View (tube, helix red, strand yellow):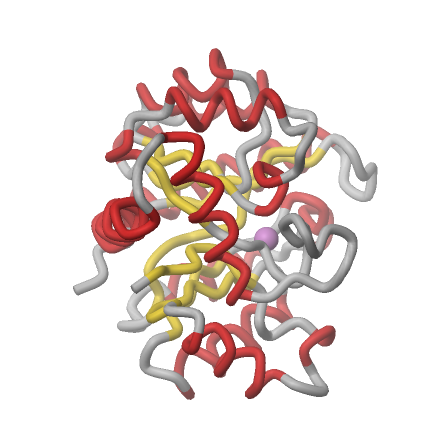
Length: 255
Ligand code: NI
């Protein structure tokens, strides 16, 4: 009874075999999936999946790399989708200083606007952070994101950063990279995260876990992340499954 808390099954990478990919996830014990729509196209395809499958939920938001093209009506649209019964959060939002497609000041404005929207709509936020730890933590603090909390998606930062996020009511989510042999810091951070704040995800089709590294990722592989989390924490796979599933249901207020 696993939950993949962050996947992109609507991606074109699954166009030839999406139904099989979803079936394989179910066969691997993934009983709920949270699909993330992050721009005009993928919000629509995410909503379509959430309407088609009762076990797929939607998180919708505007990705930082696309900040420059977000229009006021896009923000209104995201806000209006929050009334949909399958929309469980706003994301992925945040800052991405790796790709320079959107200037930092625009990214920060769009990030703040969406935190404020989440506060109005009382939805948790799913945070994308690439090479921007300090500004992410500062903006979350300045905007009182603690009110809504949410998920630090595919966390790759230090324990110090993790601790600051935990203090603001965030869950720390780990994906494929924590399974890599050389992932010393992510493994150490995972070992220190309180179990009641731990989440697992795939970010499929990206970031496939060991031994699929470099290949297309899929939601069935969240089981490999769970196995790694069990090893690191000294828990059984069953315990980690139960704990992370309870956390996901609570974080996203899913019945
Ligand atoms: Ni993602």
